[in-house]
Image (cartoon, rainbow, N blue to C red; front, top):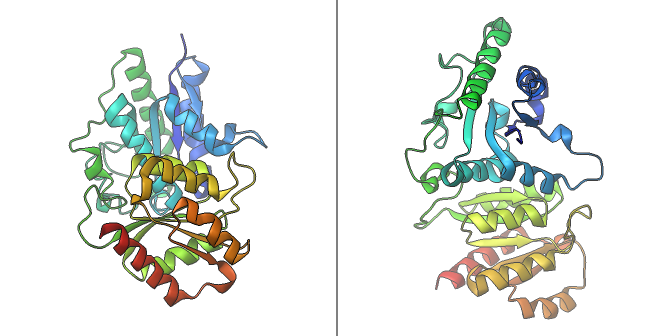
Length: 305
């Protein structure tokens, strides 16, 4: 019998805490009860995003290591959490949020109604970490008992999935903020475009490759997408045109797309992208902040007219 996969979701800045938790859950793995998965298992040269999505799809249990770093990670909140909660609602994925360090987790809409471990509500690494082993061993035993009894009752969604992720992707949009997906493999440009768009009251999710964007587009609604032409070469699709084509084939003209890129001849690219209904084409070297804001506003206005 195949052991149930436990998917570990954590911030890289909490690597030490993750390793400690893995050592306790590793007892279950050594006993043949579970198969632990964290991003440490991704080999050099492998497509890390594909591996991660496959692990989430196969997982029966998800352990979330809750810290301020976790709750400030745009990637975790945009790529991991929505998928995990969707699987929880649709497929019965069992979610264990582990309160590792003190943070304002009760202010997070999707998290505050969940059953958080430890049951006491005291973070595992509080009080100088004197009770870390005790808390993590109890959590590991609880997971083990649930597997042995083939029964887990740590978390039931009290509200629809769309309400849980409302701070990130509202289920029903009424006026501002508009939801914008930024696709660019350069982190500096993700941050720059995010900052500009937030100045005009947009909610922004920024990702670095085709696969991440495709996953979000399949699950959430966006008012506009900005796409870089040359994405990370290590991914399956490095050409942003593939993503534009995917958007057009799936959504038709309903989602405006703005190309923001550092390459290509402006006039040639404008003509080429007319076939795909791109609203505008902007070279990064010539980006004018105020003009870009106006273009975004116009694109959204045209799509809702």
